[in-house]
Length: 594
Image (tube, rainbow, N blue to C red):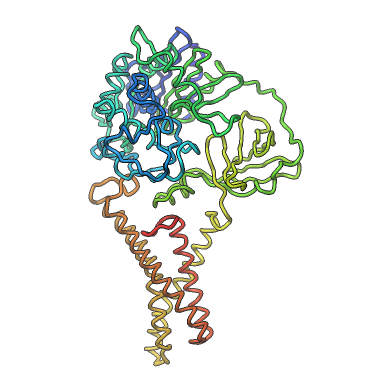
């Protein structure tokens, strides 16, 4: 084991831009921990598995779900209890009749939209108490609970607050007393900026770190390889380590069993952990990443094996994955000599499958964050059916081929991967790539189409906003004939509509600069309460544009003005209407529809 890990770690640090990593492996009663390279931003301090701190990002959730199972194990909360009945700091919106339960939170199926705002800050002084973080900007419920998986930090953060409200302790105090202390995880902490993260002399954490979790149960843990080895043992040894029990045997088994899957052929969710089938081996795991850090945590319950790897550096993910893959190859080998699957005819509903599918993170978000998720997170999937019956999917630079194994269910031609199409009211609406859900979108919803529409409409709209005043000035200078009074009024209204768009952009930029100058978190991290007022500006502009539409219709009905004036005015109004439709589509108006 030592040689395998040493070789993989040495290779990872040599081939990738990573400064250090630590590894923990539990194989039955054997425990291996080791460190390689140097501590974060501390080149003269070697990584030591028993003392060097790493940030583990979303693997923090494993501690949160372990603590949540403790309150279940003690009879304080049942997995199918409504969490709203136990929460004191947060009121869950009553959008649907079905209550959100702890089980829904642990499987990322509560039906919340994804909330990005409030997840992180760039200064540790801005980190809020958990109760404040989860009760501010409570995400909307966009679907009934238990219906569809959608990963969100808010689910874990809300679980942390549930633990606090049920136990009467702060979340980090509960975890310290009930997990860290009995397991001897003495170096683990949810503090935002522990000095041990950067042990180099004269270097403060906030001098070199610009990302701090504002939802610590989801992404705020700092820990060591040796501490995580203790957690691995607890999960693999029926909840007991060195005579200290943190969970009953039945509770450990419950954490590791499947709690949710959208289809029997898809690896689903255990209690806060993701299922992964590799060859003949079932794995429950979680990965994590924050800037400069990448983590893998995995349990192979039937083999009694667990592994933990975390690396730091610009290519931390690649370095971490190099070591994790070497360990997976050792404990969960895959037969790569399998034959390539071939289609058996054309898929049953081939005509309905083709098109573009966008992540539900964007399609189902009802706040102004929709544009962030649409533009900057994930890439859409394009699907089409080839002449020989293969389903072809393209996502970014990746192209994959699939064959149908049952109606709307496809297996990858080479890899262990499943794709499922989901239908609503008899129509194909979603594509499930494993657990990740994508919704089919129309042609006009494609970013490329909207980009060209935006450019073309902006140019046409500006010909009115700039051209009409310029023409008026020219007429005054040359002494030309003024347009009819009705045309002048109509142009003022249409100009106000177009101006609303320009003022919105300028207001958004001004607010962004003002927020930064005030020393606050960024608009994305934590917008001020009054930020929604910015969206009032384009809303008034949209009202003005609606009035301009009425003027255009009247001009054509009455045949007012010259033909050229009517055509140009109508083009400007259509352009402004297109731009306001785009703002509405991305939830950038104060009054949001749908």
